Length: 284
Image (tube, rainbow, N blue to C red; front, side, top):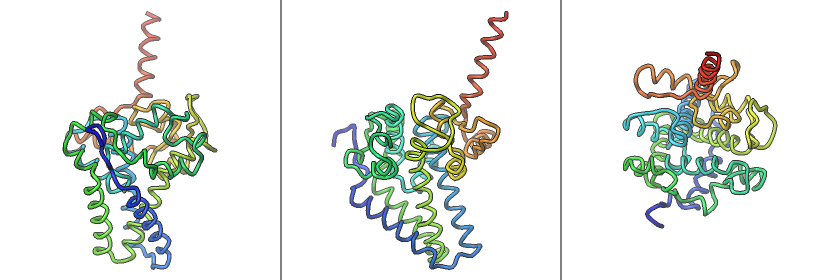
């Protein structure tokens, strides 16, 4: 390991955790699902999928809005609760995907590595276990984010979340609020990497890749309209059509209105304003 890389987690431990949580999800139907447990499941899922969409994806990977160090740290911590490794690892691998989207060099391209590898196999591969800090120099300068990205911290957060749900809400709270919610969250994110680059859906923009929008994936991810995203990756807004609900964008706008974040970028609106200004200049 060099100064520009760091190990995020042993491959064996990642696999053990991944399949153990799936086993817990399979056991959940044998536990009574009442309104209380259903509410725990919903809150656990929605809060953490927002952490991935707003924090890991739009903030850390694409810097689509600005946040102070305290909010930045909280977004990172919220993302860690999704059990998808640390914020630096997530951002670095995602940036790498955007540099090589749907080419043989893409780290998870269904066209070249196959659907299963793109869906979940890639993050178990030995070559992807390290965080390449050279790809996230803008984030690695914050020691608290480097700390948050470490394997021990990610492990402690996972254990604390699972134990807290069990101690606070019993076995049903653990199986539904931790296991089922985590598995659903994982596979929604996995589907963006696999399904949204290979099949179905529709395309608003003729991008140089196979990205596409899917109604179900966008609804479950709170607004990840993937073809729109690849058209304007630096935009915090991903729902461009009137029917494309983007909950993450709406929450970020609300956060900006009270000063928690700023410069929440709407690249579609920016482009439209630029075109309008150019037309006015030409007419003048």
